[in-house]
Amino acid sequence: MGVLEKTDPKQAEVKKLAALRKIESRLASVTGVIAAAALLFMMLSTALDATSRSLFNFPLPGVYEFSEVSMAIIVYLGLLWAQHDKKHIRVSLISENRSFPVKQVWEGIGWLFAAIFLLAITVPTIEGAYSSFLDKEFRWGIVQMPIWWVKIIVACGLLLAFIQMTLHFILAIYSSFGAADE
Figure 1: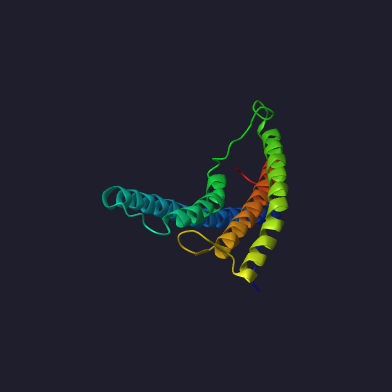
Figure 2: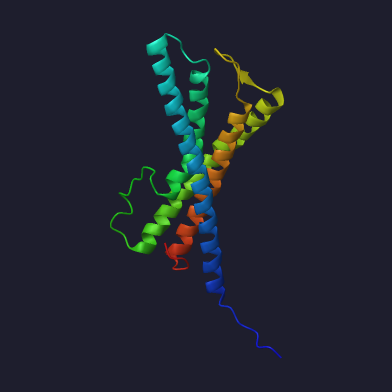
């Protein structure tokens, strides 16, 4: 008969949290690369448009509309990347000179409020994106630009940010009890 291995429940939790962190890291990297690509596209198209206007007195059609779309992608997909790298603005006045567990509790409370706020704006954004998709909404400009897909990206970005903030809340609370290393 084989010997059954006993696994420590705490060790199993730490492995699960590590797996969640790895998934979050990969997702943040993917959304960050997409946001960076949108930024690069916006910069290049704007530079080409400015050059074309200057040299040939000919604006490139659709550049303004694509820049608007790019901004939405940059902001809402960049949220995850910024949170993963802890680049959001933080006020540490309350937790500044506290012990590690107390700091983690305060951070957890902050992430919880951020998650609640994100959920509050995510739900109507998803409803708006769904409605926009059904209507095949577009924006008039020099070029007729469909915007329903951008609204879906914004809704997905907000939903992922909500999930990420909830994960950071859970990690902070677990860390405050010594269950996960931060």
